[in-house]
Image (cartoon, rainbow, N blue to C red; front, side, top):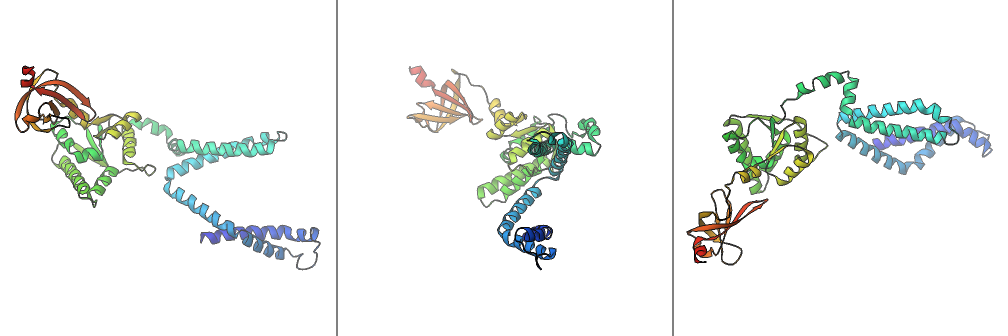
Length: 360
């Protein structure tokens, strides 16, 4: 259908041009003054036919271009389209006001007039797209009222909203943290996070499906068992594909904090200036401080990577690498801490048996 409309457009152009210029062209260029060459209607029919035949190849490209523009407009929010259109119209009006002064410039007046019109239209489009909210508010007569009511429309106080991401929900420790009272305010769960969690729960992979269902169980526990306000916000950003980027933008809009245990999301929030609460950082901070020279009693679980090493763990999961501890696997041993290494994955303690220290 679109291709036929494009063909009809070219045919109309050919009919108009043939009706207007064909008789004079036949008479002056080819000296054909007899019928039917003097008839304007013959020229219209001939012009329409020639344009249809000569532009058959061009119609496909024009139709493809129109479909591409249509798809782009369908994916673009209406506010963006209106804002850009208003800005472009304003730019064209300004260019029209300057046209008389530009046209009288010798030699370059006409091309400069065209260039200024295109430039101001483009600038108006970009500014209108960027300032679309202010433009729409201005044309609706609510700009001043929107500025006065800005604080009233903010649903949360600064830092009150805690936005949960998918990884921290699946992790589950956030429920225990809320239960202890260390995490207060309003727990905000965006709809796009909930959709991602549901998608994981419906995965064909058994491990992913179990993780997704665990996350849904954690949310159910937080909503029903724990005394904290939980709010699911139905919001989405069609111009953004990644869930993490959507979460960062929503945190900016709500002046909230992102709760996560994702290292990469933590870095993105820091770069974007969004406050972030990392569960892993909190867990590492709460681990007991062990200093070199302290004495510990641990149970050696397995051998280490290096020769004659043994590996033990504290109650909080901190790994202890014991030099010469391989012979104590399966039993308890008193060790002396030699050094402590803090890594991004957690804290690692190096030690050696106390009996070996005494022997030395």
